[in-house]
Length: 449
Image (cartoon, rainbow, N blue to C red; front, side, top):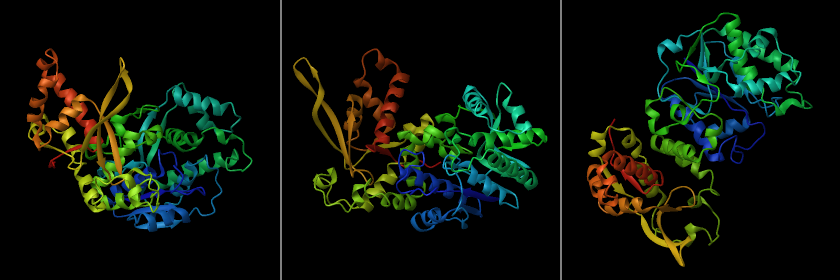
């Protein structure tokens, strides 16, 4: 099956604009992981974009699209209506296809049962007060809505299909759907420069709700990648964004605010590094102002320039180490038996020290423990606050240690009551170890799946 994707820059610079993400580099990492995950399973993955996107994907990122088509160079589109270029891409297809958004990743190929579906979508959505409030605002703004769509909007719960993945084999229906969406957009002058309604999000209506309404009107079955319905505001971290479980998902989708979650963005970067290090390195180098090891600045005030401790470390050494620092994903998802037989290691460049904190105990200023390490990306040096249990874990890991032995060695760190509760100790140690893992202070031996 053919896979297509759409990127319209809207005249914005993807090396400077965040496109809804925490930082521009995460936006690019998402496109890279999306494309690369698709190319693992599909021979034909085509990007429809403008000249900015063509340069980004072919020259800067060098992503393995089978074709990059400059389609939207002079597109007349209000910035707010980002779903419009996607609809145009749907309408250009003359054979069975799926369209996959750039914040969607497919760790596995879709099943044959899904791929033969007349119509395909990510999942059905159950409308809550979230969509209800959005659509009530639209209805009050004198939008002209066709009767079949208005019928759905008058229901207490407004249903739709999430278009993170959308397509199918019934090209005739998909063309009809696209033309219905275009009629809505044109009738309401959504792409007119002087249109004042761009502060109201109509993308959900003309892409997702309309797709549901037209399929319902014509009694068309829709096959979904996720075989359950999801509340319109119910896209949880655990169900859609947990990169620790990447290989177990059929689909991941970083919707809305998840793109600005620091932990999710960091784990996106780690996943790209773990699976496709060449592309991770390429993207990091595109942002020298954010990644000091690649900065041409002569400033002596940056932490990296001030440091002499790790001056002889090469970028290649650090990148290879940081690949190993990603091994812990499998550890967190493994059984207890496998965990107990896994060895835990301390970052070989770790430096522990104390410094004065901002709090006092009486007249005495409280000192805090800090762990410092060199990093490939970011400032080049990372300083991390560590609590007493983390400090004890790092102390015991002065030499490589089995997790089972580490647990045993940490028992004296807990009070008399808790020391008898093996489950509480286990959970507390794992929680603190995840903090150390994500901050690159410890890592595990490789676990084979």
